[in-house]
Image (cartoon, rainbow, N blue to C red; front, side):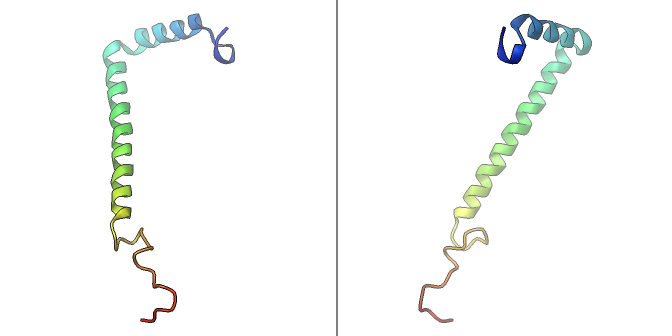
Length: 72
């Protein structure tokens, strides 16, 4: 028995049924779309991190705070 009672044979049966039902081309396109969405999400996270680390950006308040005792 595998993870939470699901064995390798059950997984193989589900995969075979999915291929028979949808076809290998549609499953391949679905995987490519899912991978593209995940990589786009990761890219946007890295881009927002880069934007936040720039000085003066609204997300980075440490560059905009006044030092203790400073007056405007």
